[in-house]
Image (cartoon, rainbow, N blue to C red):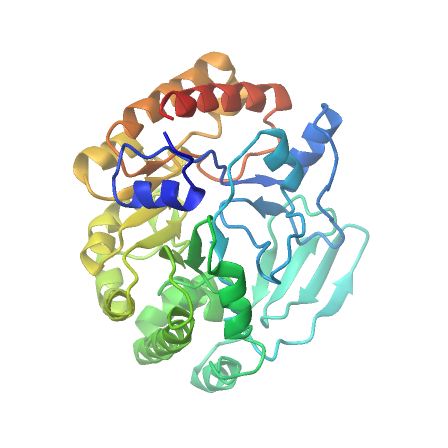
Length: 392
């Protein structure tokens, strides 16, 4: 078989072409995981920097290395090279976030923790050693007046959101890696409410301030479309990634009825417009158990979902049986990587069955945790690589 680029590999998955090789990728790692692996013998060439405790999770499924059009090492560079992984997906660098940013401030500090104002306006409490997720204390929007002020930092024409067309074309014209639209994390239509008001504020807002919720969602839908029209006029992308972390272990944070009322119209508008502009594939990133929402996602035009957390009850083989044309990414139980070779082998056998049906990209069902030894992960990787190589 001729050499196949990673872009062609991903396109094969998106199009359910089982004749195309599967790329060797991983979702990501916790910082402490990489530190453990260094102590257990992984070569240290370009270790990740870790200064202020805000870089706990190192994602490898979307590479940020192209954000300044430089070939600088990414945070997971050493693991990527050590395990011989394939060239990653890159996200087209567009700054869709708060501009101008809020000033970063340290408001409180002790030996272990800091309370900070982040550049997106949130107040958070973080551990200095970066060993836990931040605790969100306050969000920038509480009412309509607050949203009007906040929305003024989301003008698509603000300088600094885009590089020049010449820079984009030079870097991406002859690329062999997949390119996606993500914009520094395009929020889905519950997640953008969460980013504005917090989880509790968003959930209460659906009941107490429904008109404001629709106003926020209308604003951001139009904002996304305006920015992506400009991007798609410059380069072709392989899919649109939508960050929608709206589910926990027992199911979604809002009911399917609320999703249908508050999210479906905006998903449909965004996806229909992106299709008109040539985008074919739409992938949603949500943790937790999203089974109750899967048919609604599919109905609005979503073509893929990840990471399929097994601990939350997600079952990729069950999903494949129910939805034969949905792209599935992830679903390898991270807990099996701590349990030994037999448990790892069971996960690899599951992958083998899934690959035969197409539309599946194997990786761990979120970041590889620090209780996974280098020895266990090396065994997992060797078994996975042998499986993927047989198909090449």
